[in-house]
Length: 149
Picture 1 (cartoon, rainbow, N blue to C red):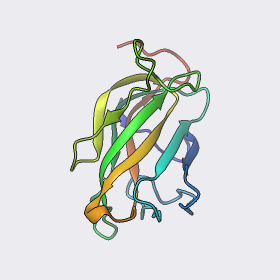
Picture 2 (picture 1 turned 45 degrees about the vertical axis):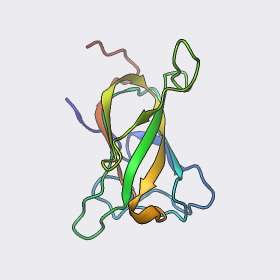
Picture 3 (picture 1 turned 120 degrees about the vertical axis):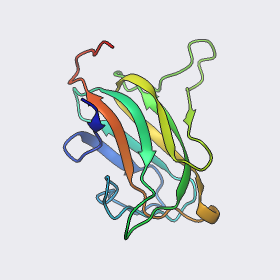
Picture 4 (picture 1 turned 180 degrees about the vertical axis):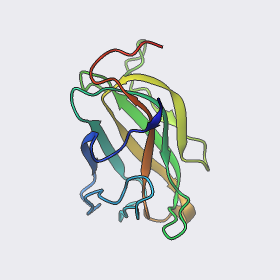
């Protein structure tokens, strides 16, 4: 059953990779207040607790909120496999980058055996610093077992 799998119970690491972002990410979960960063294009590292691997169908930044609307417009993600290596193109060896549409911070696809991901903010409203970042990842956990679809 698919649901939001980015929860405090499921993550080992959920952090900005930039020192300019002074945040613990405690409010960056679905329907939270969101987290701010002084940068326009910070990167966020998300790693699921071992032995969990995930089957992910959607990565999105929640913009809509009654009291805390976010300003992220476009995102890019690279995924980590079960060995904590970035998933690369078999021919070029380059990391496979998934980019959302320009004005919709949502990446959809079928990503199996995912240990985590690195999310990069590509665009914000009016090219401002990131405000009220909240990430939601839809999918399911495999608890280290291979899920066959």
